[in-house]
Amino acid sequence: MKRCFGWCSAGAGAEAGAGASASASREGGGGSVESRDGLLWHTDLKPHSSGDFSIAVVQANDSLEDQGQVLASSSATYFGVFDGHGGPEASRFVNARLFSHLHEFASEQGGLSVEVIRKAFTATEEEFLQLVKQSWRSRPKIASAGSCCLVGAIADNVLYVANLGDSRAVLGRRGADGGAVVAERLSRDHNVGEEEVRRELTELHPDDSRIVTYNRGAWRIKGIIQVSRSIGDVYLKKPELSGDALYQKLAAPVPLTRPVVTAEPSIRIRNIKQNDLFLIFASDGLWEHLSDEAAVDIVSNNPRSGIAKRLVQAAVAEAAKKREMRYDDIKHVEKGIRRLVHDDITVIVIYLSHGGSDDGEEGEGSKFEGGNVDCTNAPVDVFSLHAA
Image (cartoon, rainbow, N blue to C red; front, side, top):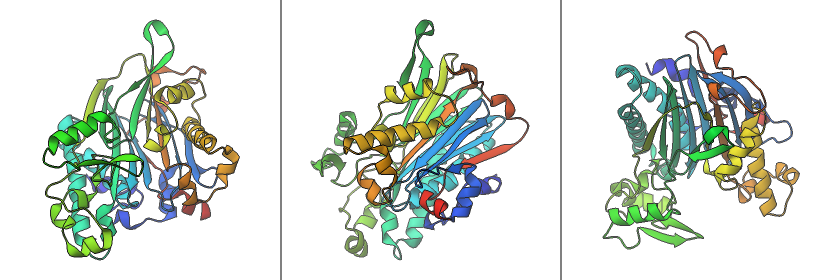
């Protein structure tokens, strides 16, 4: 079953993290490059199994570390936001492999379940570990590449949300008695900026008084990383690697006696209800500038088409305001330098067809028929896609 999904991921394969062509991104994305901002890409609106979706990405880093993907069939929809750090290798690898594993295990076991999702995350983690073991001596920094993973799946009117790291899933639902649309967070931020996460790590490492320290303006695990769960970050999971002399020389990790980061996802299951209108899945670059409530207000009060792009632009405008700049100023800042203003941002908005929308647009779920499978990938690199 894995082979039938090989076309779905730009750069698919064991070396996905090593780089993929802009043409692969263009073919997989099914979207357009924003003409007024060469670092913004979006797909305005496409159907999925039970509604419509919109996706957008803005690049800030020299190499885009975010990846995003929506896989839609007549029976199910998978959607994922993969926010990399320490380089793009891990997020590209996850984008290439995770949905393939999810489909394979769901097919073997007769449908989605918590066990299926855990197995898919574990298989992806183990494959990336093998890639790191094979290649880190020639490119040691791959051992410090990691990715947050936020995955949603809808099948048989049931929503599954699985999360590693601090990307976030937020539901927009109609309030009681048909009132205003309210925000409900569906994921947990695995970030040591949260007191609960710091307490969890302290309890797991009672013999390490420096498991979490305040460094460079933020709480960090071992003074290095803010997220406590991820795919990759092998040097924080494999003590034998962190103690290797060559790696210490080239990547300067901290010596470990046991793993300090895990790939165990938090998973939530929810029956989709009549008042559930839409989902916002986004990397932390969005939530740094927009609250859950602000994002839900934007989606509920604007047309469906292009809504993910609208959210990205709202976040960038807020980032600009904090720097006493205008949005138009930010548009002309080059990648790399732009990271000083905002992070890479990926947003996927999933409309749930029965909910309708306040602007009167009808859902397009009925247009997705038959045994078709459609995969929409955000570009591997927005700048390269635009330049091509």
